[in-house]
Image (cartoon, rainbow, N blue to C red; front, side):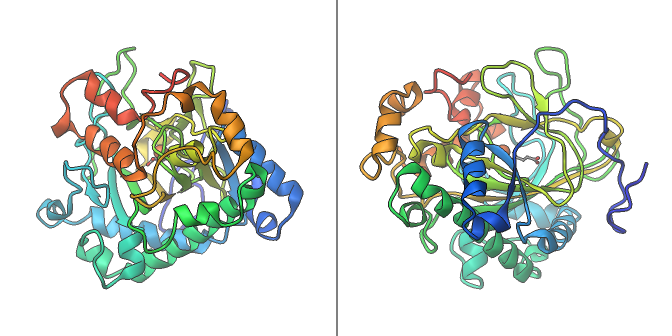
Length: 382
Ligand SMILES: O=C(O)CCC(=O)C(=O)O
Ligand SMILES: [Fe+2]
């Protein structure tokens, strides 16, 4: 069945009867208005799976122009795109061509294209703070700037609402994610092309004989709002927007079975990433997730998604905020993953190592894959 949601994007529906992992729903408008019950719900989501749906977030009208920017970019010929490829040195901003990242220890290749725009570049435009971008991005920088600005505000508001629950003084988390400090914060438009389309790559075979992932199992770095938070360190908060296409899966703690996240119209999927989890002393969870080819009939469609990743300034130490909160100190003291955190990491060193080690060009064997995960210190994660 073709869902009549967008005249420019006909697609099939996510299967109604497919079993999915339920997520708590958080109403952004209520959190922003200081509704204590809603903030409790947000706190609960961050301490359990670290993933939740976010509604009434105000980013709704900014997503289709971002997908249009992505479409124009991915249609460019390779000789125009490749000069902006993110490269093998640990930079995320830029174009990432499908097939240049690994998705598992075996060395299978990813099948998705990214166009990542650094918050630093979007907000400072026309000043170049990290790098330059293809003309399709530059021509639409006002679109990108609006999306980055709004998404960043949403995630900063959520973090600020959580500070009292963590026992943190007001403004502690904002200071770690300060505008103007060079960081890994970025917008990301993702395309997994349909079979036969430009840039399509078939998935390889995993160890279990099933198709390999399109994006391998990982946690996010900071805070994501794609539909919202991801799992696997480095730290962050993210916000994810889809176009109704499935394929995102989570591996709930203590289980071995990957579970689908159902795409819900108008809802972003948000998740806590590694940095926010570490700052909280692991009170908040950064959960492992991945993207697989969407369940039929959506496996015949192109898969589009859009994420905003909020990540701390590169120079910020990556360590639990034990001096600012007794609650965090007490939690970190009895948390095995926090005790095993590598010393001397910054948000930047953690992030760059992970980006770098998932690149095919830097693969030495299963150990380089492991070094890209960010969870190697954590006895509770694979
Ligand atoms: O496309 C998605 O649904 C998830 C993407 C993701 O997890 C990521 O880019 O970190
Ligand atoms: Fe992710």
